[in-house]
Amino acid sequence: MVHPAATPPRRILVVDDEPHIGLLLRLQLESRGYELQLARSLFEARGALKGEPVDAILLDIHLPDGSGVDLLRELRERPATAKIPVLILTAEGEERVLAEARSLGARTITKPFSPSKLRTQVAVLLGDASPEDDA
Image (cartoon, rainbow, N blue to C red):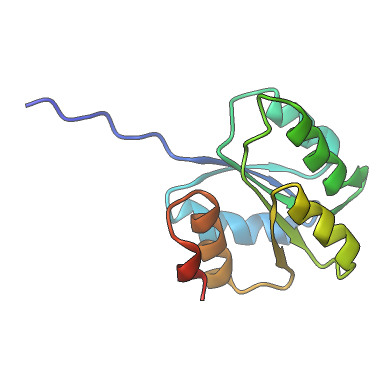
């Protein structure tokens, strides 16, 4: 009997300049079988996106070299990246910015967030759970 090859782990690009956020996300998501790649700037994120494809992006809005929403717009304009699921992680309270991110198809979660809510949001983002599990 031939066993199907194990599916490779899903790759998530985390774009956030706060080192503790990267560590927290690594702890919460790698233990669930996701593979994380960290970028601390838009420049690093753009470089990472030229490499292996990613299954999802966790994206901060405020980065040292610009706005995560600018990167989100760029992603949506390119056919190769237009469908990548994006979860905005932000302390941003400005509804106009969050509304634009949502209009571009991103889900949003505000900092500080609970680890369990984050895990659920990522599972929903990747289709591993339904939005009803978000409660």
